[in-house]
Structure formats: structure tokens, C-alpha cells
Length: 109
Length: 110
Image (cartoon, rainbow over all chains, first blue to last red; front, side, top):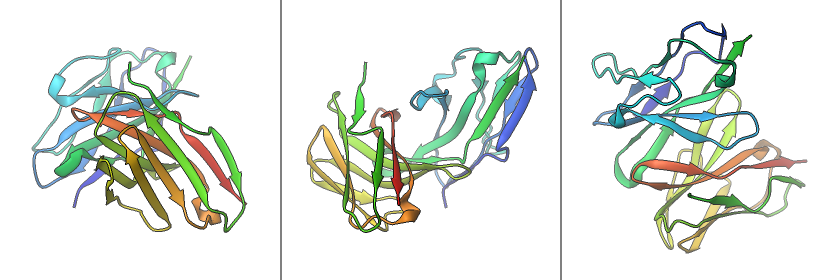
């Protein structure tokens, strides 16, 4: 069965520290993986997707098929990175999406 | 810029009432989705639609129905609202596997 797991509900780091938000998935085919972000009082929006292999706002994520992981990383966290982060996968018919339970990132000054 | 709008930001309803949540997108997307967002549970798919008058159940369709009479509009219906349907409801449309979300409707069922 398709599943996305984000083991951390809350992650607190100090400004300037590295941050890694964990995401593991299970899927029987070849999924597309995404990270979505929701800043306070804003709508959920796409942060990055694995096929584009780009860095957005200093964040990167590498798809590790062997470990079925798609962890989100940033070398130096900023206070404006504080938000709710959701890992998601898309697969199968009709672009159905599966979201993880989310990790709240709190970057302290 | 893709625009997804939802008819209400906040709603308060009583148990047993029929509730309509409306979602409109302006980018001619074929796929539209309804999720509920609950702390600790993330986003859970209620229903989705891949074309006008077409719908598919998501992971938690019980107690909900949907309507898609026009391509740009996707409605979520709570036939008889219950307190366990108090939640944030998010609508989304998608194009090339990217989802575009509305601002959400926070529903409180008393």
C-alpha cells in the first residue's frame, strides 16, 4: 500500500544550524516525490519536486530508492523557514497524491 | 498564476445540517481534489475528480459526497454534518503532477 511517513511531528533548530526533515515512503511503482510547505496564514504550496533536482530557498531533497527516502535538507536554517512541511508522493492513475502527516519546523533566533 | 478559491474561510454549522463547500479554479485543470487537514494526521484525501461529472473516492469518503458539474468548480457536500467532521478542508487542482491549493475552509460543527 502507498504510504508516506514523516517521523517527526516537530523539529526545533537554531538559526544557522543544518536541518533535515525526514520522509520515507512505500509505493509499488515509480512515484514522483514532492515537498510542500505551509507558512503561517498562507496556503499550502509546492516547495520542490524530485524530478526537477533544483534547490529552492536553499532546500534540497534527494530521492534514495534503496532506502525509499526523500529527506529535505538545508545547510543553514533561517527564521523564515519556520513552517509546516509535508512530504508527498504521486503515482498511479489520475495523479492521486499521498501526503505524510507533516513536520513543523521551528527555527529559533 | 493559478488561482484556487474556496467559498468560505470559516463556517460554523450544527450537527445534522447539510453543508456545501465550494471550490473554483481558473486554470482549466482537469483534476481537482478535496482533502481534510487535521493535526498529526496530515492531509487525507476525501474525493477527487479527473473530469466533469467524474469522481473517485479517496481514503476517507464516508459522510461526504462531491459534485463536479463544470470543469472549474468542485463541490464537497456533507450530507448530515457531525462533530467529527470539524476540520480544515483544502481544495486543490493539479497540472503535470503539481497541486495548487486553495486557502482552506475551517469548518466547526457544533
